[in-house]
Amino acid sequence: MIFRYADLDPHKKAFVFELDNVLFPAQDYLFQVYYLFAAFVEHTEQWKSKEMIGCMIEAYQKNGESAVFDAVKTAFSLEPKYKENFDRLLMTARLPLKLLLYQQMLELLQQIVVDRKQIFILTNGNPQQQLNKIKQVDWNGLEPYLTCYFAEETKPKPEPDALHQILAKHQLQRRDLIMVGNDTADELCAQAAGIDYANLFDFIK
Image (cartoon, rainbow, N blue to C red; front, side, top):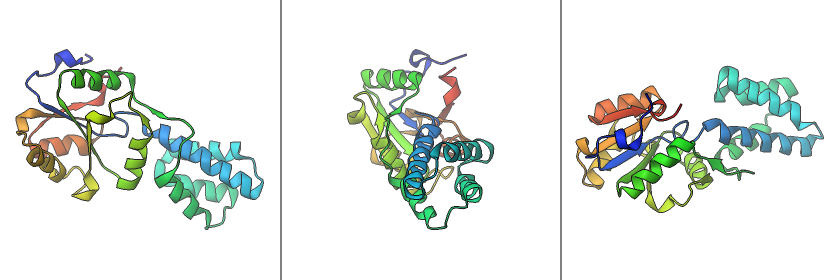
């Protein structure tokens, strides 16, 4: 069963969302970074970037984000100095294309705003990188209604410290919130804080 906004408890006053793989696919950011890195190396070394991009995407899909640089370094005998360029792009890249929200999540956010409920983004990960992503999402005019928190600035999820901060700062009760995530850390965080939890796939097909 796919939830709609109308199916949710109308007494909720605020919604808390993770960013990556909840509001938009995390790979949409990473694959654009890989494109930019490969283009940079192509310009510097006069290599073809297409094969390098393919190598990085394959490494990501098989072994995850942390395996990408080592895979491309080995495959193309990259000098260690390129790691600094790669890491900088991951943090600060200006993307060729805006990051697009999942359609169902865009509609959910819009309905929350129309209903005058609060929206919080509570995201794990490096705050600089996560802020860079947030700035490059096509929010369709929702920016004024978003309040963002970076869990790393207190304690990363599943620790509930950041949720407690939201409750206290915004004078909310636990029963007022629902958290939407797509990871065990999100679910455990919600449980530890005593708030309701819903998975991304309750909302999208």
